[in-house]
Image (cartoon, rainbow, N blue to C red; front, side, top):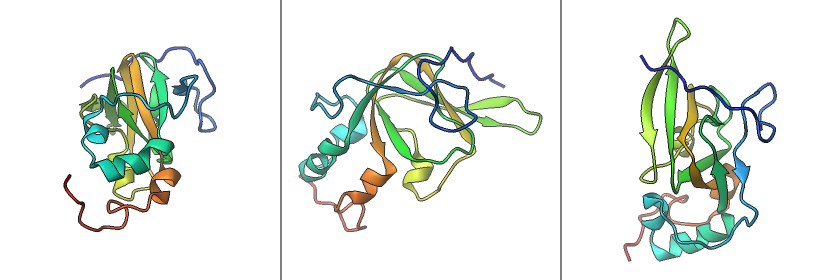
Length: 155
């Protein structure tokens, strides 16, 4: 059984009340169009990626920061550009077990993308890095084949 990594001191206040863990911090230039390293975002067809650009927000995170707390509302998705995040689940005796390591090939918030409002998982940064954040509200505003359940065009 793996233990949740030691949490560093808060740099900015956490998003959820009662959460003493540090929040992910924004870069000084949000929505800047930068080369994408995340495989999921980079692999989207041109039309869908153009719809996403204005809604994406670059963020920076540090080792030990909690990106998502157990059962917290899934209000955004994170697409790592560098670094790594691990997800943990709590077991009956209160210990945690590591479930997945997520790097630039994946994203945090799969259950939210599939419709869940929350998930019984904690996501913790284990290697400093950067990511792209997309809010759930912004994702729902995108009028695309993805959100309207139409077949996507391959370009």
